[in-house]
Amino acid sequence: MSDPRRVALVTGASQGLGKAIALRLAKDGLHVSLNDIASKADALKEVASLVEQHGVRSAVFPGDVTQESDVKAMIDGTADALGGFDVVSIVEQALSAGAHSYTESVADFNRVSNVNITGCFLCYQYAGRKMIEKGHRQGRIIGASSHSGKRPATGQTSYVATKYAVRGLTSCTGMLLPYSKIMYAPDRIAALNLGPHGITVNAYAPGMMETAMGMDVVGGHTLVKWANQVPMRRHGTPEDVANLVSFLAKEDTSYITGQTISVDGGAAMD
Image (cartoon, rainbow, N blue to C red; front, side, top):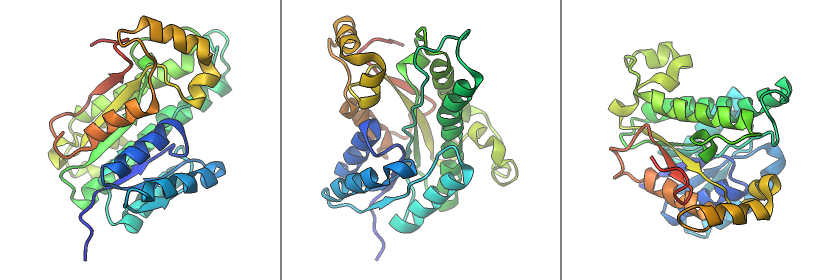
């Protein structure tokens, strides 16, 4: 008997935003596949156990989102292991703190770009292909931008540039290529209009979050300062982002696409 539940893949799922998103989607009743780098495989297994407490199935696929073969393997593996492929939430965050445009090394810039742009591009590309292959009319692709991708800050050159790029990759799905080009121009999959296939592509843009990375980069004092300045008078939590991803992943959000939505307490208002 086929399982009617939808299936989600969450990258960067061993901690922070990715873990919160995975648990929220499991709470929503989706089977959840989990990805992060190989060194975090044990943490992924722990998250998988928490996912299954919601009465859904899980799968674990360690891998590097900057490697095309790893991305293809985790998406194919998710579809095979859990019986479908309906939602992908990409949680990739690399940065080079204190990096100004006149001081940051090329090596650091390339490292951040590889994770934040190439990783996003590959996930968008292979997720779109798999959803079209499966004939899904309610596919959901959700990327990770940032408040910094809307309101740049000093000392974050590569991070700001890459998070602006995620917004571009998300919105350029509105450019039209014929359906036949899916097979013959895969390098341009990010420019396909996935709308006719029922697939939406959006991104979230979090402000300062109470995560391990956030604390390492800015510290508690800056989080307090942020909280005192934004209209909602608090810093964000991983659950705030997970709530938005939960909404965007739903089947009845089929008329929202190409958007990068802020989750920052009102710091950046469109």
